[in-house]
Structure formats: structure tokens, C-alpha cells
Length: 188
Image 1: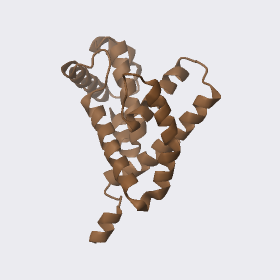
Image 2: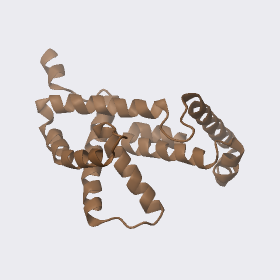
Image 3: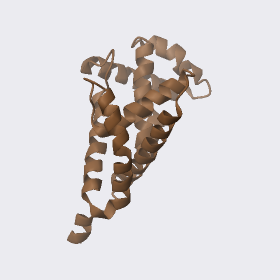
Image 4: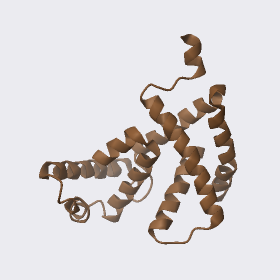
């Protein structure tokens, strides 16, 4: 939970991938807080008891959210969906502003990969930004399982990572009210 809040401030892409992993960890433990306690929280023996208690409460709140939102077996909690919505909005704003032409170039360089991934998704089409995160998360899972990744897929993921890194950079600036769009400068 401390890790999550730091990641959210510093790198929204890492935060979202981390939170998707947390959702999967919760599912892998059957949404059972006692199993999460023994398989995850108890491994942090070096943390003070108060922090382990806070960690347990955090997991309990996430379990409750997952149950209430009906994402027990699959899908993402609304708090994670909201991050995607914010990133999609920022993406639109950046693309619409000629001041961010380097960002637009990176986006249009990534777009053919996104289109190809969306075509392969069949009925499970997601937005462009979510498609990028789905690809990165899928690769993360493959790597954790020790599976081989083709050179073509590695190149595609490298491009998606570059694009999301730039988007994350702008998100952090926007989050800190440091991002200035052309329209903001015109009004000043």
C-alpha cells in the first residue's frame, strides 16, 4: 500500500501494472485475507506490526471492493479503471495540442502495434491505452512463467513501453499541475 501510493505519484504505468498484479494475487489467494496474511503480509517480518496491520487492512479493503464491484474472477476494480480513463483523457489532450508533437510522433509510431493487438483481441476490445497495458501485463506474466517471447513481440513491447513512459511522464507533470497546454499559455 505504501508502494502503491509512491508508484501512483512517481510512475502511473508502474502503479497500474502493480495494482493489476495485486488484483491477481488476491484472486490467487481466493479473496481470503488469512491466506493473504500468511502468503504475503507475514513475509514482511522486518516491518513494524503497525505497518503489517495497515497492509492487512489495505488488502481487506481491496477484497471488499473486488466483491462489491463484481471483479472476483476477472476484470479490474473501478479505481484502476479510473486510472485508464485519466490516461486516455490525457492522451487525447496531448494529441490535440501541437505543442506536444514529439508525443504525437511516439503515439503514431505505436499505433500500428495497438491496432494489431486490438484486432487480435476479438470480442474483448479495449481502448488504445488499456490495450497497451494489457500487452505489457501479458508480457510480464509470460516472463514470470519463464516463457519465451519472440523478437517481434519484444520489439513491440519496447515501443509500447517507450510510449507509456512518455505518457506517464506527462501524467506526473499533470498530476503536479506542472503540465502546460497551449490553451493554458494563451490564457496567461
